Length: 328
Ligand code: NAP
Ligand code: MG
Image 1 (cartoon, rainbow, N blue to C red):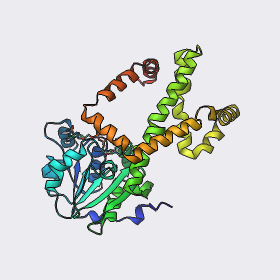
Image 2: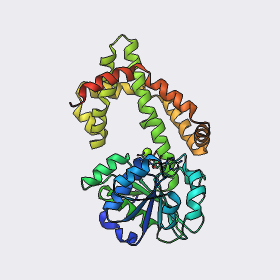
Image 3: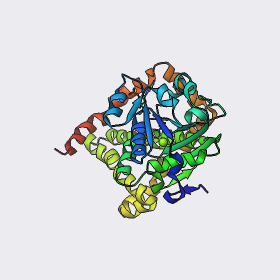
């Protein structure tokens, strides 16, 4: 059983008198820095001068410093720049300036699990990973709630590592929803698997295959778009609210019967084999090597794939349809 922490289990006071450097001010950095600041903690944002984040953080009313300066005085260093840039940034700007006994914090285990960052023995290495995009995290906090988060400890130099990770989670409101204790390895590998096999990769492949099947059968593009893409959110919202059973209860009996009897034609034993291969490549580090190489080569393949996805008919027709829903 995974241990779950709530508000009353966690003491924000462990961060009293702590300086928290939030390195990076993007999706996670901005949301987390603002929430921690609003929770009364001492936050400084570390970003490069001249980049878009610098002005944004200042406009938001936060203390801003260059990365080495922000790291120097910090008791907690939150590494919230993209995973690809973390290893070099760590070696060049973070590690040389980190104070003895500081806590090094991540929102995803990638750099640590694949040994791309090797912290010294005298720092805590912790994770606080909100299970949400940054903007939704901020909205939930402002509504007086929070999004669920995972915490983990990879290295406990101070003896206080878990308490710090939990306090950070409380600071962004996550203990109101629930904070789950895990390990770097589990978080990292299951997160990669989820986004590849089901969430980002799996679901887009499913949508595209459904769209193509209807188009090849002679159905109009607009109708196909509604059936396989637009309505997906309605179904997923039901599943998120009340699990698979809630969805089955709400849809028509025809949809329930058809769905339950026909779905194995789509996701087959072959598909499951593919999923196992995805997981194996994540576990062995093969995917990590491939992604690091792509990044080092300037992301040429990624950009080409993105371009060709954007040119697909489902995207073209979707743009027109979505513009109808914009509230004027
Ligand atoms: P992001 O939005 O892409 O980060 C952008 C920030 O990183 C900007 O402030 C940018 O500064 C800075 N940055 C980029 N390259 C830099 C470089 N070479 N040197 C210095 N600063 C640089 O990142 P993110 O999506 O929030 O991800 C941060 C971490 O959170 C990752 O570990 C990720 O896996 C994890 N995570 C993300 C999400 C999510 O919602 N996206 C969810 C859970 C966990 P400039 O403005 O100067 O370019
Ligand atoms: Mg994820």
